[in-house]
Image 1 (spheres, helix red, strand yellow):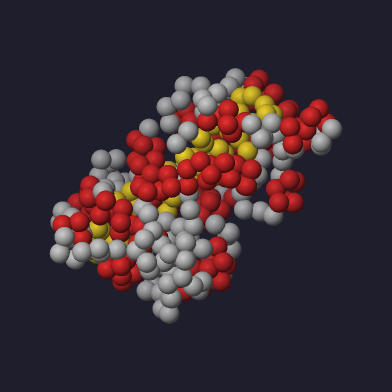
Image 2 (cartoon, rainbow, N blue to C red):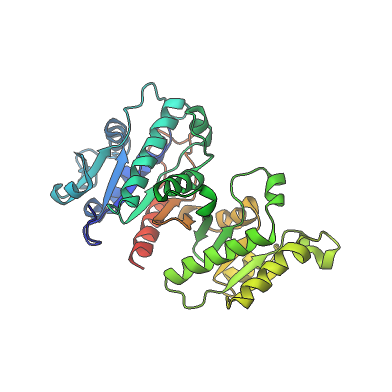
Length: 347
């Protein structure tokens, strides 16, 4: 059954139970009480109860009055009392999980919560999915055949649509105030990332980026395409990828009417975008695009998956095992991801 956009909640997966995900979720609800009427957590009830205790600065203060309400289906959010964080038991209770340590049990719980959230969105019961951080080593230990959120969600969406994964291309976009960057390749070895810089891959990335920004309200998004080599190859002196692969993709996109330019020198294009010359930069590989975003605004960074049939965002940081259990982790990036999901789901 599909519920109206007004009633459909956002589903927030709890992330790795050994990391800071549950704690920043608890903090986000405390800092933004209005989330109680809009967001449902797909997680483990006991893990979220522990997170509430870990983040309670003063049990008798109004700020720490947040309590957990377990529900079994999303429409039940409407009946949850005010001031309660609604949680769905979306996984088997993980056994033997130690805060700050990688484990298969934690990886399996995190994956199951992602599955639950994605199914809710694919069935039209949720208007967006926000995912708390997971640990890739824990996922692998649990036997999950995907290196991260992006690839797992892509596989789930393709399975739901009954199409091969290759027919549902997705891309990762990282954003912070003043800069957005979309990646041609994601979680692969650098050597494989270089091999992925092809005319087809770059053009597909530009098209997916343009479609996302149009849906977000940009009439004609200005897309800058970064080069791969130093100084964008210097006319072939430092490599021919710009000449043979990237420039032809840009020219094809321009022929299709897109406001795209490049290849630009990668050491200056992000600065120019931040100064307002472009709306988004297409980067050739993971670190090329993520380093400038994380340098400029990790605390407010947001990861958005482009190309899925539903909105998905995530904070732009990891599980921070060194902070797990301390109650000191900031919810700022998670709140930015929730805000971005709300904005995109309304567009």
